[in-house]
Length: 143
Length: 143
Image 1 (spheres, rainbow over the protein chains, first blue to last red):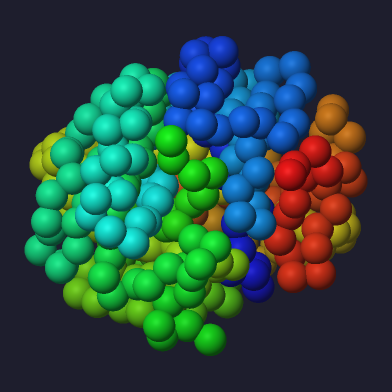
Image 2: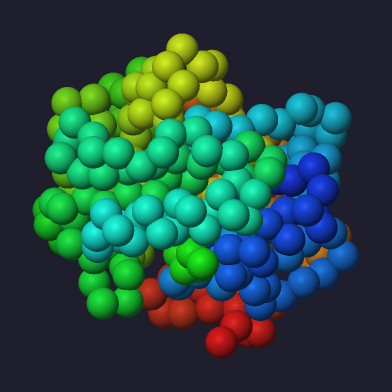
């Protein structure tokens, strides 16, 4: 039994300074930094940037070539206009566009970009998932 | 400018039923299910299981072979004993152990497993990061 909770999301990066510069350009600032790692406070959880080689070693498989793309992060917004603004900000920060925001079959609006290490972010508006004032999301069917 | 927030974490999976069975064996239950996708309520955010091929198409790169390992999720616990119990539960659910929980150089205690699709979870106790009663984490240096 493991609670339905994520305390920390870690992004393995090839160049910590490059990754920090990208997230700084998005407006992020770290709450804690140590040699080789930077931690950002999210809503009740933390996101860490950590060297990919160190991450592989920490996982107990030193030398493994870790890759990404099949686990993605999304940030939702109340409106399509906010998705567009955020997507433009990501491109200005140096993100690689994968799919520009567009209306999608499930009734929402969504685009994808990759950060400098290929980590994939979706920016979306989902009309069926209203966000709380603080940006958190509780599913209509939860609880 | 993009807020420091993750609304949705998506795990691309090869076999949705297999992935759902694994997370069910951990004690997770979906708050919302639709054809080809299952959503779990976390603390103020959502985790989705979604077919890998569909995820690649949604990202605007149909046919891409998405992989994983360089973006990881961690769940923190107040004690080493709880890390051990959760790690055993994950193995019993069919997880692949990557590194059994052990004391680590930064002063904590941590192990890693992979879910049936290779998505990497860390289970950890970090004495420098006290958890709130509800399991959320606010860094000492945040805010």
